Image (cartoon, rainbow, N blue to C red; front, side, top):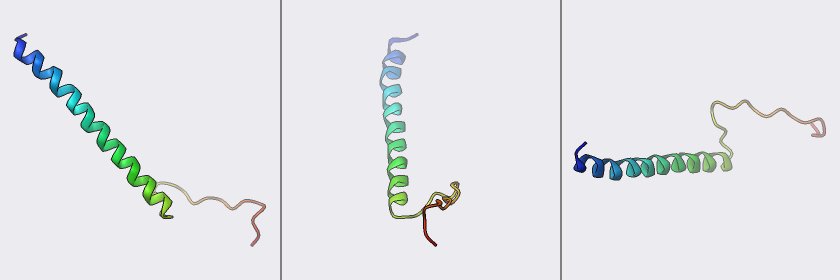
Length: 55
């Protein structure tokens, strides 16, 4: 392989990894904010009431 390609790959692979990590962390933070505001995720079932809760 040409030396330029190796240098290119040594730069591009870590940069793409950082971008992917940043996007994942941003998604997790948005979910956390939604959950803390009381909005449940669409894919989760509502919580069942416990026996100790009074009606």
